[in-house]
Image 1 (cartoon, rainbow, N blue to C red):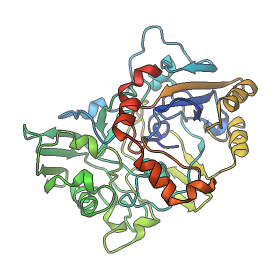
Image 2 (image 1 turned 30 degrees about the horizontal axis):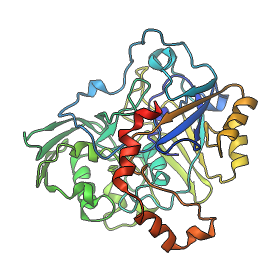
Image 3 (image 1 turned 180 degrees about the vertical axis):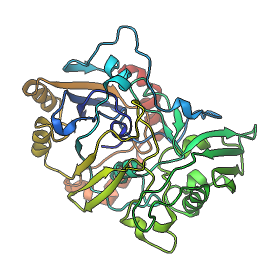
Length: 406
């Protein structure tokens, strides 16, 4: 699973459990959810998309903070609640989702299954194993817009730690980010709740530019200036209007205490985000609690997050995963094939199964090998398959012909 855990940041109003189905054409996934939910899922809802946001797209010169959050006007003809069943390709948002200000419920514990994080250093890998934790603990300057009214085939950006941004050079060689005032780092040592400033952003961006998997994103950065504690000016070597979109993926803002003269960034996570991590047990899971000093407001006008606690588990057994979904412990499940999904729908009648194409993601257009197969353990085999892929044709099929799956 990957994604921005929107259901923990801004409730969509209807508690759900989802299934990601794999037995569909290339470029598509299916989602299955169970309407309602048990008490331990009170206040949770499903993420609006699967996968990290794309690193490219049409950037907006400036977005007001007022565009982030709030109540979305009800759409004509929208149902009050999503009914259980199997839905193909599209599922309109319900009235309850669109009007979270009235329907949101607070409190409770959210439980879900995740993949075991190898580390938490964003210079060392693009991976949902890191992203799941980071999206709970950290923020970025800009993030992808999520929610029931968003279009999954568009990369729309909205403010995060930057309340607005402007393309101040007509040719796309300079951007100015205005940061939110009053934001604090989580009150956890060694950061200990100090004020968040533009210097924090400059330092971590310099770190990303120095090397690692994010170097390409920052390769065009010529210089960065911090006129004051809440302003960052970025000058580029060449025009690149998509720079804001490129940093809306994995460019999480980390505190200097974890990487300057320290290697704590490998195992520690302390951010400005909605949840504080209490514990991490490798190959078992992580536990988080709500950040009492979080700066963002929910649809009901009160500070986020909606949930009090998050528990993430590592579980490789499909049978256990399925049982956990049925019992309400996990909000999503990934079946082995269509028959497995149909079995769940038959025996869990409160399930909502949604098939839909995927169109964006920082690392979604790759291939995964089953390493239990001895043939794939030979690196030469994997390299041969990689070299044999026509990447342009693959991207054309995955993106340009997505209408075939609608």
